[in-house]
Image (tube, rainbow, N blue to C red; front, top):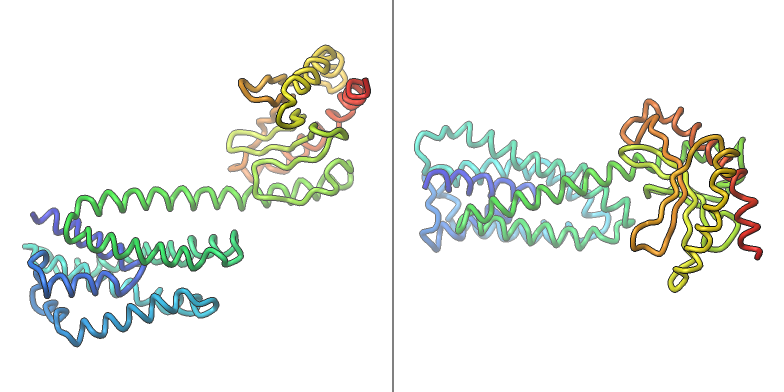
Length: 330
């Protein structure tokens, strides 16, 4: 049973990292009205109506304040100090009946767990949500945090193992979101740099703005054909993407096949071999050149990779442009 109590303590302190007062209120109410959790002295003071009433009031204030624009940012700063403290209290209180558990260590564990969750929320998740949605998703995210905190708190007391599984799932999702957000920021910087460098060499991408996507594209001069720069965690590449849209499968195929007939001349003028790809069951086709000098996670070598991609795109355009015009004019 002690292992379940430990899991319960971790779950409750993690919940405090999302909302400081919900897990404290859950523990207080369950300890007062059920046998699901027993609080030893001095933590049994949490079952006092004065404490419960105060927690209800603070919970309402926290929930409402976090939904009001501008106020939510001030509230988040204040709560960044409150949440770790609440996590320490709820961890120590819920672990108070476990034999040989040092109160000081319990408080430190609670501070660490709730503080870590709170830091990720305040320093990573909320800024990312605000930046990507202009603040429009802050309220839905706040509601989701309150629901999650309540659910995990209750499950941590009633079915600790389920709460632990839920925390693992939530942690995994959060990590994926953070990793993707970090990649998007890197891609934005990469595209800003390559577009700035290409200004003096070509007008191909002069009207294109940097994005957080893995690629940026510009028209190859004909509808359905686009030149693209692509950056991934493995490499960078340039390509001609052929896709005139739905119900144009045969047209796409004909364009690709007509260009493929000139493969030797195109590659000779380009100065290197190219990948000619029929994309499986997709209606689109692709002709590309991959550069392995660097990748998204290797910013120290971006300059060389970007130069290769820019020069490659200029040569690629020269090598294939006349064939594109000739094919599509017939």
